Length: 228
Image (cartoon, rainbow, N blue to C red; front, side, top):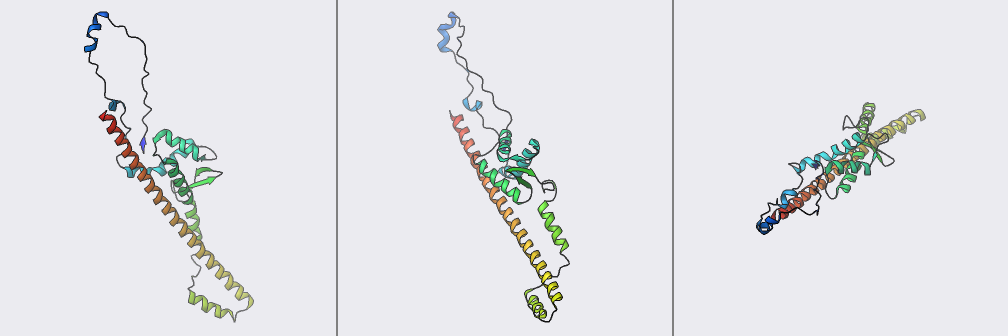
């Protein structure tokens, strides 16, 4: 994705009559006008040297937009898109790529979405550690002392319950519930991380393909203009 280096100002063409000396009228047809080739006036805007760099920068552009806009309640997709389009040359399917990347950043805990507006998470990994990951780590630390039971051990414990008192059975049941909650939370966290990684990979590939296609189209257009 390339930086816009300012909008090109096209000189206004006027049709005002020119003062021509009558003595030079006879030689007018022999005059050679030095015209700059069309391709020189319409050179394609530069891209980054490597398309891979554009893929890696999409996250940074979104964060840059949110930080520069600095809206108290966050910025919606349209505002973020407008900022990026004003600063850079996005590919044709930029809106789809932006939606995919925003969803991925929210799922990974880097952004917070409230009422269709996006804000950077207070402890985001874009500037720190993900809030969701921190919560998960805290939960794991609190439950480090909980004994993990294998299936054979659970069966053995159930056999012991037959001779337990009501209080002992209640304590064992509470322990089993705690183990189940920890296991479910870890499974959900692993699934979330895997989904976020998959979304990032898909978005990166789509963005790379779009950048490469855009570069090819611009190069082809440049060659056509130079041939004129």
